[in-house]
Length: 542
Ligand code: FSO
Ligand code: SF4
Image 1 (cartoon, helix red, strand yellow):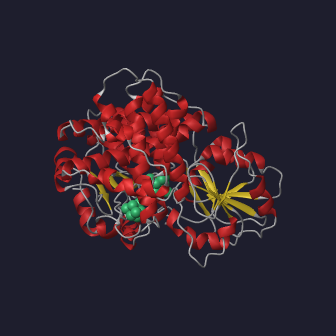
Image 2: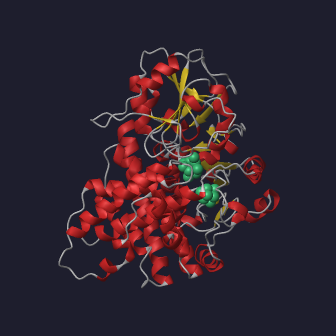
Image 3: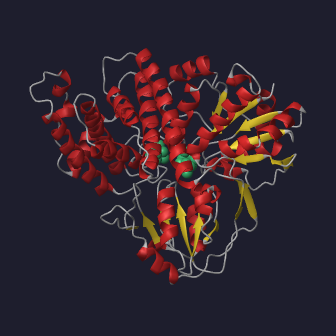
């Protein structure tokens, strides 16, 4: 096997024996062949007259399912690959009589009917097999970015928000991955185009979320527990959460959020449910410990699922939905009208004990662009008076490696006149540090989930306007971003496409970037890594 798509790739190069995340060589191969089949579908989608929503969504959901820590079910990818090849044949029918060279390509003709055939096929068709190191690197950058894009488009679609041009953008990027006539320069411009599509995708999701659930507002979130049994919901899918909240009303149970579901507490249309009780625990990688003490059922709506330890006691309390899957975990049924049926989870919850407290107190969040802009005059005056000297964007991901302690230390060591802007699960490294306030403005402003990094870009653009600056890079903003998986890749590409420079990316640069591509990113965007807190505090603020 070979996989290098996340920050925890073994030895900073790639997982070759077994995934650090728990992905087996067989699953890796099945995903590679599945991706190859999807590239075929996307390539055809660009050529034919009509592509059904079903096919757009199939590609989008398929990409989402291959994101790190989303789905560990081998059979799922066998089924999806078979479906993908069926769609390929249907699309090809629309091209009968046309002499397109691509129709002779293996991607349009290969057959894989069994799991074994699919696993074998991967040896030749994984994007990682691309010979030229730099083309391989940029193709991987694009593939991983497009996976992140697909995840965000999927969330928007669930709420009824679709922009067909973004589906076509997704197909265009996929088709480029096997196009041998493209030069490195072509790939560079496509990558930046992907970043712009990422901005549009995140803007669409922002509209979907804020129109459906209202604008996030300053909110205090309880991190303790109540006395009633609870259901813990994790992942990013607010559409699943609202259905769960509806179905659990007046049932004598409470709903707790975990990890990236925390920002649900900031939305008026979600926080109005009294039984949306608290946020339990921390970032995704601590789940194997935290799920032990929760006592009640747990629902995974999206990544990040960590395979349970053999000794885990919570396995028969776990449910998956959407693109998540793990052998042995129960799956939430979907009704004919598309709604999810949480009745089994609810009945199970009623038989469970209340969660055991692992923390107490509260945290404050809800600083997405709309809320921050209502505070604009206070913020601008604090900057003008010199009370706020720097904004430090510390958005992104958390992860299990010890080196991520850096982010806690960095946040603690920041001068008192700096404000952290955050989004994503990276915040758990410093959102409970009590870093205080400046003139009533908290020093950690949490915009929301990783996709709400878009909010941080909007805030930066609006501050640029408010301060009458020409360039977003003239703002007193430092970017010290942590990454883990592929959604962070689209966030990074989106920021680059908006012209943001001097982003520091850590804890390590992506393993899939070749030295030449790193050079390009350094030269063009002044991207850099991180070193020690002491050195970085000097370097970033000079
Ligand atoms: Fe992923 Fe990062 Fe959003 Fe985390 S991009 S790892 S679970 O921030 O949250 O999906
Ligand atoms: Fe390794 Fe990350 Fe790939 Fe998992 S997703 S196999 S940890 S590189």
